[in-house]
Image 1 (cartoon, rainbow, N blue to C red):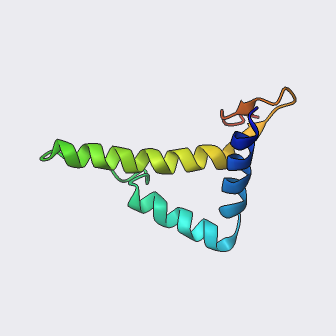
Image 2 (image 1 turned 135 degrees about the horizontal axis):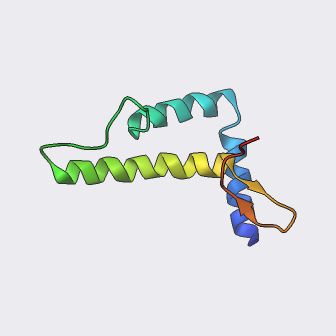
Image 3 (image 1 turned 90 degrees about the horizontal axis):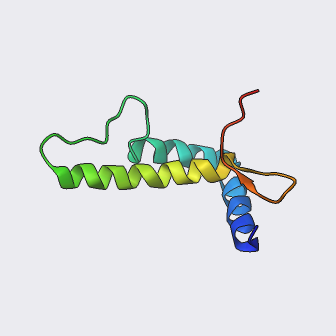
Length: 83
């Protein structure tokens, strides 16, 4: 795996592992419309829908980094564990 990718994962995990990071991640969840009770769809304005989807993808990317793992073959695993 590229060292830069490993560093980005490490930085994301470190940043959001603190109490302040967790609080900010909760704020991002609401702001990026990632809460299960929120919809990205705006029935009046398709540009607003596109904006909301873009913001939502930023939150999902951060969570994907935080939850990712590196296996023995140095590959990034982004699928959730189902143990």
